Length: 434
Image 1 (tube, one colour):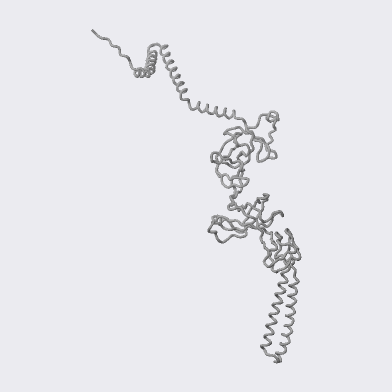
Image 2 (cartoon, rainbow, N blue to C red):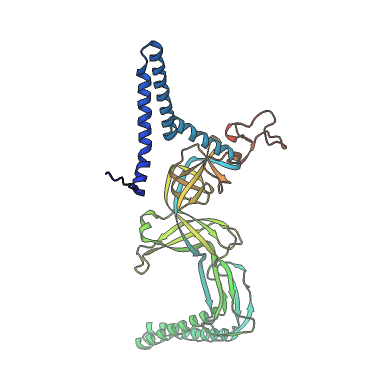
């Protein structure tokens, strides 16, 4: 007697069977297709089998294309998406400038204080009371011009006394000179008289010199910058009276790093910008120290400014710029064209009316321009206004080129040219350009 047993399949075996099921079905479908193709012996049967096989191949190819995507179809789809993305972005109004060739230089910049070429503090050399004040602060004075007078009566009396003593000794000397020739006096007595006369003449000269000190004069032509005494004030030798300065030319001293020493020379032009009012001055290097300061590693450089407005005064601070190197025929763009993006310098260009972000390598720069070492060619249009929020490929409407408004012939209501569609690239013609 046979016993029948039922084995319950496990979940794992069922899962494996289900995974194999598509393979089995495909195999069965292939067998049926082969049977259909070979089952007929007449011409009609052969034709039907070939048609079925061709249809199958076409279906398989279509499925494969759908799954993987043919390269041409993918490229077309991507291009269509990019074009549609560009069209969906709103046009942005910008101003552009033309990349051009020009010269640019590097500068060493320092801060300095303007100082007078000559400045002297005038002190009293005689004691007495100030009897007259002849100059005030701000007065322009000539060399030797009187500034003040000290009472001089005492000094006059001393001079007269010295003159009288000199005259007496001079008469004695003359008398003895005739007598010594006649051998009436000794030579020793005559030499004593001559020595006494010389001493008296020296005392007279000293008295005359002290009298001259009561008249205080300017040591050189310049401007009185400070008056430190008043009328009737008693002064003593050494007391400060005035300060006089010569403003022509003005000077500034800067300390330049030793590595820049070989790029400096006397006569080299220097630009100074005053902190107080922004006035720009032109100077030149007149002296370069022959030694390097060991503590700072710098060289002292003297700059002179010959021409300056009347309201420029010593003591004003100035930014001093010394040209250290010049490059000629370089690609230059306005400073506003270069923006920073993730730590890199980027320029936005107008290419066929759309924004193109381009990373650039920069070199020297000044107040207006930046040198482009790589990334921009001469004649290309760089965006200088409105580039902050632009996106790659965004349409552009150029309203200004090189600082001149663009004449677009637009209708105010529609924003389009009155005589037709907008020009390609969103550009117009700059007013005044040819």
